[in-house]
Image 1 (tube, rainbow, N blue to C red):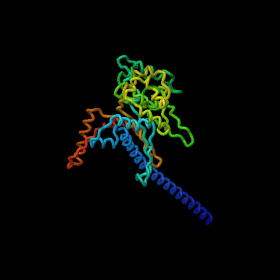
Image 2: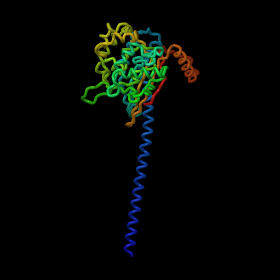
Image 3: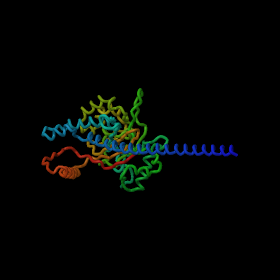
Image 4: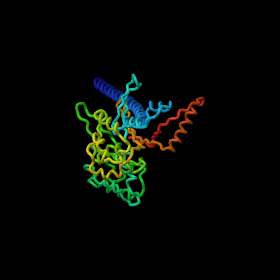
Length: 371
């Protein structure tokens, strides 16, 4: 009897110890999951802050005057509009439709992380609202010609996208407020919506262009008219025009070609692209066969007014992306914004009598998407 009791006590003790070990393991696991969850939440918020900070870097590049030129303007030095414009092109063109990457280091910046952003031009896309004639209930001739050859492998045959877009607008009978509304079209929900810039190659490999078309990179609702800025063409537009698509390392690889193009650039090139295509050929490749048709929808003079900026913040392996539409304010909007900024400045520094007036255009974020 004593032996049986001893055996029962031993078995009971082992069961208790097993239960304690199991509960301890669960406790440690819960604590570990909780700590890692908290760390990820904090890292996500930091990554979001970095992503938003990318817009400041992009806007500084999109200003027609840089800081030095702005200072020269304030102290009364004579302005050279042509030089200023070419400086603007040299900041934007080589990096257009590509990631610009900035690494951050704790000993210098106070944090280990990365900001990268990509600028694309809304005026280098097809304004879907302006391309469709709502009175005639059809796409304008030049745009129909452009879109009829568009196809996407294993998804849409040639001509099918144009047909679906036409049916969609006929039924809708009014303009889009946002390109993302196109996913309401049957089959379009499976297409890539937001642009993803081409990736840098792995060491020892050649950089490759994108092989996808992105709805938000091909179409826009933000440009002011139905004209397209060819020099600022989006990646997806290059695809349907059969132009050379951008590659991640173009800014370095084609550095001299961009420099020559910018040095020779004239605002009126668009008046005759047939004649002036040789300036673009080193960047965009051979002249498209449909250029004579496209001439009617290409802008005659430079005049970009809206951009999109995809910004990405990365910290501790957590990545956050946000896309913003950035618009150059018109003269009336500019004055209203200046009045607002001056009032804020006066509120911060009531004793200061000196008011510095900037002649730079004001850029404003008008739409944001977390993606």
